Amino acid sequence: MSAPFDFASLGLSVALGLGLALAPVATGPARAQASVGQEAPAGGAARVSALTDLMMMADIMSVMRDEGLEYGKTLATEMFPDKGGAQWDSAVALIYDPATMRRRFDAALVESLAGADAELDQIEEFFGSARGQTILRLEIEARRALMDDDVEDAAKLAWEDISAEGGARVDRLTRFAEANDLIESNVMGAMNANLAFYRGMSESGAFPQEMTEDQMLADVWGQEPAVRAETTDWLFPFLSLAYQPLSDEDLDAYVAFAETGAGQKLNAALFAAYDVVFTRISYDLGRAAASQMQGEDI
Image (cartoon, rainbow, N blue to C red; front, top):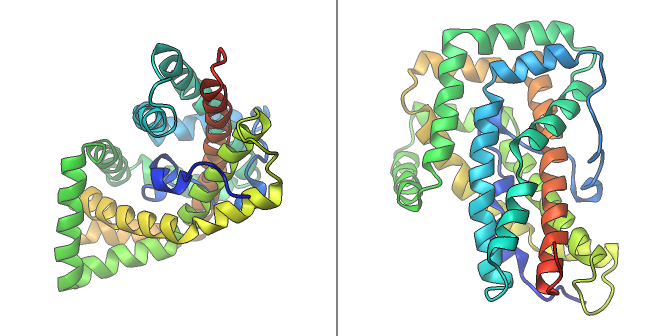
């Protein structure tokens, strides 16, 4: 049995990672709802909270919320064009509540960084520096800018030109993406989100017949080529746009940090934390969409 709607056609861009400091998942579809309800343990929570402040997580969550509200409009247009409206908008806004997202993110990050005091020292040193703060601001500004379709189109064209010419900058960006496993991890992240969406819809009775876990997994894996293409098409224009103002020296330093033990530890922790956030968001969106389609109060 196939799902009655092609979720891959929507392009779940809200689940894509955006550079080391903004990267989501690294788990795989079979674990899409792991730890969705966890709360931060006391040990290490204060230091991780300070770290996420240092990494401008409030600004990142704000961008994620804006992306989510736009994505909610896309869902409504594609899935129930005559049943959207204020009730749906309100449900989407609640699902993308920044405080809730931040709480779940910090809780997961505490768990992932437990016992990593030595690495945390290096992470704080890098991102607390003027160079680190500049990089974070550039990533956030680029992420927000790419919400504009015209900017996104221009960034893609610019990347096509740059990558066709090749050279040291292309090599640096490619090395950065490889160091952080950004393509593979973000593909898995988007697929996790898709699976969680299916689960939310299925558990809310959206499908005419019960959809088994195997059927949902099969549909999600069938979307993998399209998800991979979308991820690649989006990621490199983002990296190019975000780091364009950086000198070669600064970009080399960022790549070098990403390749250290501390950088790898942080990257894995960020992926795990975003997995918690995005799979719960997608699951809740699935449940809300199912209720909207069935004409129920959300």
